[in-house]
Picture 1 (cartoon, helix red, strand yellow):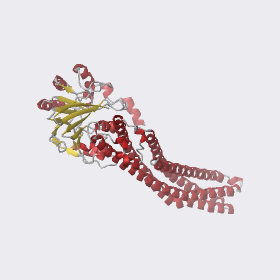
Picture 2 (cartoon, helix red, strand yellow):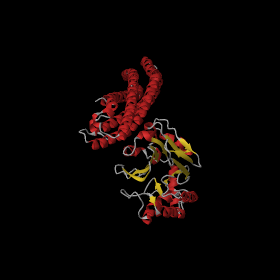
Picture 3 (cartoon, helix red, strand yellow):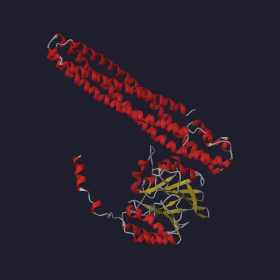
Picture 4 (cartoon, chains in turn yellow, green):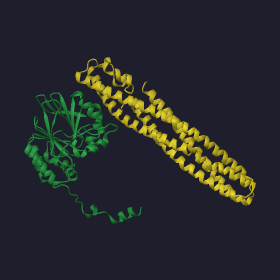
Length: 259
Length: 265
């Protein structure tokens, strides 16, 4: 396998892994969101026991917090759907890449063999078989001027097959890119809610710090809320980083073919 | 991958491909055969996806892939069928034959392509090699080893392609033809005892093969039988008692302690 093809395969494997990571990350957000809701409801119950004005403000704050998971539920649902489509698209793409690798290896071997007997100055590495334009012009390349009729027919057929597969991969990567952008937008909207949750958690923490010592049991709950919000933030950040990395790899892959 | 012409008649050739030094050790060595008749080609057991590029490249030494008219899969194993989608993609007009019982299973090797196969009935059939003047015959070999299995007989060359019957687990650089039959049986015996499920089916196949009386028997793994080794091979097969897993109760019975441990998990 040529270095450029090997590199291409490694990059595609990375994108495939990113697709799976994004899908898993999105699914874990649902659980985090549910945990947050349960804690916020618990907060309302605890605050109700306090029975003072402070208790009332904590009820209000916890109420806001418990509403957040409900508000982000449709966003999470959509993000999961987009991520699933994205992962599926990358799976289809990786199957197409597998086909491409087989065809391109056969084409490269064929080129190497015919160049050997044609005694030209060219070698198989001179041809970027990832580039559809190179593949389209391959049969008429001067390097193959003196090849046998059989080999000419085989070069035409192999080049055409490689070209079709690489164009298919290109289309699949573009579609994956669109889905990735969609996922990023959904994630931004969920992130905004994450900031609000974080803000609410901080407010609850501040408000609860004024509680008298016999009502300090509330602080454990607040700590849990803060932890969950922190996990939510981290998870959102990780998905965001995965998507950003995936975006750069896909962009590189699309560019790689025309180098 | 090496290739060798094993029959060269008037506009009719058999070529064997195999002994691939580039394949990884994990991949079992296979023989692929091409019949080229009047410029049209028939591929027998084209090999697994792992060796597809090597097989394809080697084939180009002999024919233009435009001329591959048909592919016959003796049975469904991955070392035979997993590359079929690649072949049908490359040669969209190629006709692919396999036992009717496996068409739906082999279609799982589609890799994103609809894999249309011609299901061969149990009694076998005659297959034309494209628009050449040659036909080959699919001879039933069910339960040798697969439950839907065919051998391929070519009357022009008098060669019988036997699939896994006669297969041997050979070291690299083993000769293409069997030279020392007794030594070769050692390499075939374990394979047949484990892979062939039915002595009765094997004996029936031997009867059919004797009736056909081929000059060569070409297996998918191992070495080719020709001359007196054809009869020696059929006699050897006739004496085999297969389909037994007779390793003693210690091995064949499920160990109670182990089973209880599994159950508790």
